Length: 315
Ligand SMILES: NC(=O)c1ccc[n+]([C@@H]2O[C@H](COP(=O)([O-])OP(=O)(O)OC[C@H]3O[C@@H](n4cnc5c(N)ncnc54)[C@H](OP(=O)(O)O)[C@@H]3O)[C@@H](O)[C@H]2O)c1
Image 1 (cartoon, rainbow, N blue to C red):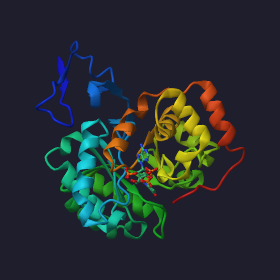
Image 2 (tube, protein in one colour):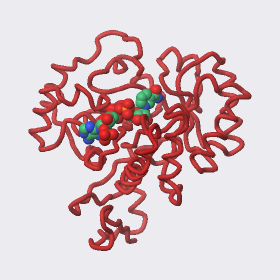
Image 3 (cartoon, helix red, strand yellow):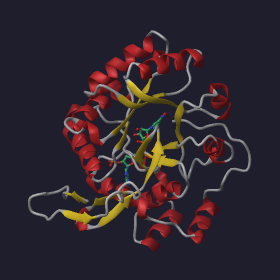
Image 4 (tube, helix red, strand yellow):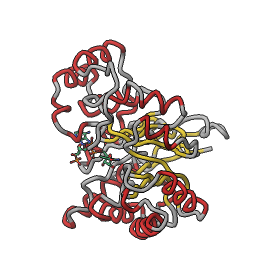
């Protein structure tokens, strides 16, 4: 069996990496992706909604808001897909549909290569509203189905009604699976559904509250947790001296340390949003970084783990 990958920048001028593997081997190992400078790295995957997906995906918040940036955003998502960041997270809220349109453009002709996650506004999560919202999203995405459809956060409609509407969409083939976002432990208890495939929540070094109870609760349910804002929206976190020191020790960037720190845990996926090509490449490589105990301890000194229940943070 031969697996080959083209180089993202200029497929014509660079050789394609080729690997010869025994039959059946590919299903036992993570996908191998060729990054810049011919560097081959393996993209870790995990089982989410019955599908093996890359643990590093691509966020799309703030995309689709400015038409002048559209080409850049589409190119960014395509580059990410080429690098193995094949899970794409979007929402009807982002750019009021604009981000879904960007995603639709980016995945045109390559729908089968991506795992599409979108989210419904709580005010559309009713028996009548949800199928209509889903149809609008599908149209913008240019797809017949969404792989994983999430309730963006809890709203005015009873959970049972939303779940019923989601199940109908699943039966109709419009979505493959459904999940939730911004649900705390009590919400998951109330939901009490093994059909829920994920919980997407704020999680990064600066916001560790979920480690006290929500993360263990998801792990106990064997439900992967999707960490949003994994690099603190590219803000002050990335300038923290301890992060920079750890990064320097490993010859990587602060963002890569922030992502690797999240990815050291089983059942955690990250969905950084990046438009700049250098950022996308860094993010794609972050899964390779293994942080030794001394680094984890140094990070704990500055970003202390929670000692008691904290209210679930949202942005
Ligand atoms: N469910 C929810 O309620 C919820 C809430 C918030 C977010 N989300 C999802 O989670 C995704 C990620 O969160 P987010 O976009 O708010 O924040 P984020 O991914 O933590 O940060 C994005 C920012 O970091 C920059 N960046 C990306 N990679 C970088 C790198 N390697 N080095 C330095 N800077 C880097 C980006 O810049 P460039 O773009 O210029 O490259 C962008 O400004 C969202 O896009 C969205 O899909 C979900």
